[in-house]
Image 1: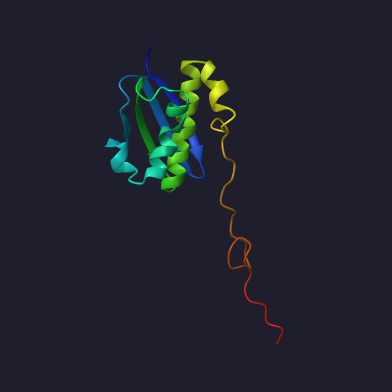
Image 2 (image 1 turned 120 degrees about the vertical axis):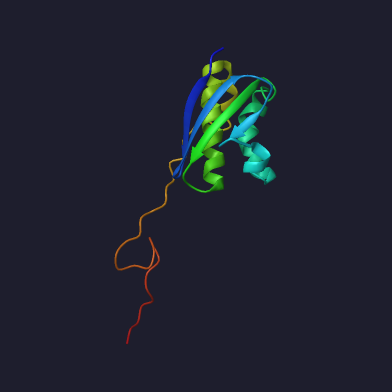
Length: 128
């Protein structure tokens, strides 16, 4: 099996993932998974597609990720890994689809409007 390259996005984060046959090493921006994402929740999010398809020990994952915050980055990586696993074996799609791991989350930050404090928050109204 050659290297499979997929892209995942979430908010403003973009993750490029390279999945190859291996022993379960996950490298993000040349750092170990535990170093890049210190919290257990984010580590779980990244490993979720691999654990669901029982491939945690079969593939090495190399990731380049930029933009957004840590949660957006973790979810972008999760989407990219899910897409790569579907290309490895189409049976994985049956497992990942019901969990919602193949859906690009379309929610983005709403832009700030002029004459307002934020996107929806207004300045305080003064009657007099």
